[in-house]
Length: 258
Image (cartoon, rainbow, N blue to C red; front, side, top):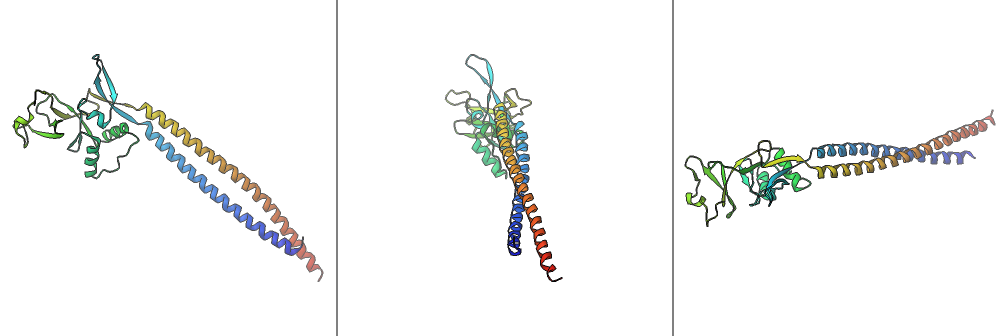
């Protein structure tokens, strides 16, 4: 191979070697990104392992009691009869809770489902569940007919800004108005908090799928890196050989003049 041809081949191989090294650096960066993604997937999985749901006591037709999974809409229904206290604002629906939280500057209240949303807001202290009370002087009454809260005045026994007659039973319905009080999961016999087994199984399945995807990518990157390293070593060997050929050509050329 002539000197000019050797030089051209050397330049081509050097360019390819630089391209291989760039590709290897890019793959290493992608592997690092995968490691960060793996950490995030694992952290999300750990958080979901703590997922719980709130259940409320229900009486079946045969008189037996059971606990049913609760959401804002289920627990605030007239048949079940809970309210929700958001830092003094009394709500009876998920939309009212969200609006009350928004007014207090709490906007990030997303959750995977309605069950998780209720449990999260209660466990983090944003929402307090209110249950019917046997105490006639407890804090709140709720008018289900007019969908509004009446605030009791414990000094007079009357509802503030309402005629006392307004809180008397109407049309022979003795439970139009209910008196409510704040409660907690630990003290109430009408609500309980349990592990969300369905969400847990879903979290495990999603974690395994995400990790399998990440591991498959990582394995593919390792294969590509190995191939690049093999090609780089071959190019390096040929470059060294061409350099030796070029040196020999130079030596032979200058021997003519000695």
